[in-house]
Image (cartoon, rainbow, N blue to C red; front, side):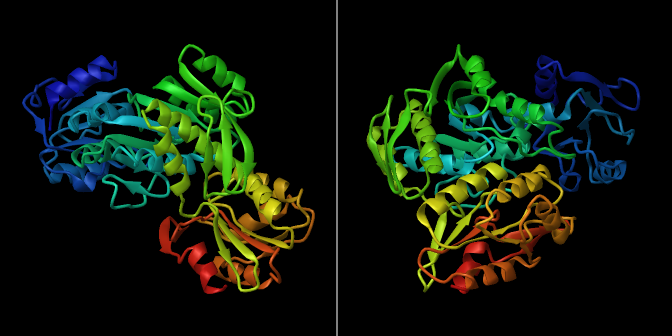
Length: 481
């Protein structure tokens, strides 16, 4: 519940309040309003709802229908003149976040908050942290792959970082379920869209940065993308930063006066004696760890989670057990064909993560490597060139380009755009299931490998704005083993 008086005080303290317009004049019909619901979906409102008008495609008719359903007041950046009071603010997304905190009883104050940002590795690192903290605490997890608010039931979130109203509702549910910690992935969009506005994290982790999410509906430039990623550092009490990441000097200067840990080769916290399923560390925690996920980059993600969880009170025993027990759906999952060839299923969906994946597979598999890859439609368009330029450096690969969430674009056209940067012949097969079937048929012996990149554990494909049922790369590969 939230009163209009509370809402006004919060907005005024944030310097976000402009005025309340009631039929163009100040009749003060709104003074006694109490709201038992908050929403940004006009189809869900009634007389007890505080409604937020957001979105570039919002239409006045949506609000008119809401008024018919009993809506008494709305918050917006403009007056739609629909006959009820309009609370006008400078930034409706900021207003949503702060009022959601109040409405749900400030659940962020009852949880220890750990956030991961970076171009790649957020989900894997979050899973490591979840398994570490799970040993002696009761963590909740908000992840691209899976979300749990009670430690028992898991579901997939629509967004990497949910909208603020949904986020604080989830936090409140986690508190009700007795959770003590919340681990979450914080995307650049979370700060661009003000989804975590006003939120302070106990620990924020910056894993890496490379060009991604740059396009007409995302970030206009890399500088803008990097800036919004860095906002996590400003809004954390302590931070963990990868010393090997590009532009590390910018981060080092930014966090110099904060509580911080650096990791990687340019710091005290390093990985020593890396092997396929174990690694040793030096620095703040000098230990040997067993790990199920192969690849040095996964070990680096584990080290980031280790340092973060140390700051949240995890014991060495909990950390070692948590790292050893971590598996991530769609991240370096491995199947073996009858001929001994391996099939790797991984979410690698940009140039940097694909380069890391190729490096790991080629380190362990010395035969023929077949790569099945696509690129998403209507987002992350810079990835297509990144993929093409990367693959052009690997003429030893057999490449099959296919669909990956084409949305409103033609998957063949996307594939051809990737292929335009590649100087050797590649195959284009629009049907992803058929592409996987053919890829598996091309292996002959134990050293061969098929890499299914991009979809990970997703059991849907986004086509024309809708999630179409899709069996999933792993299940399809199992079918054709």
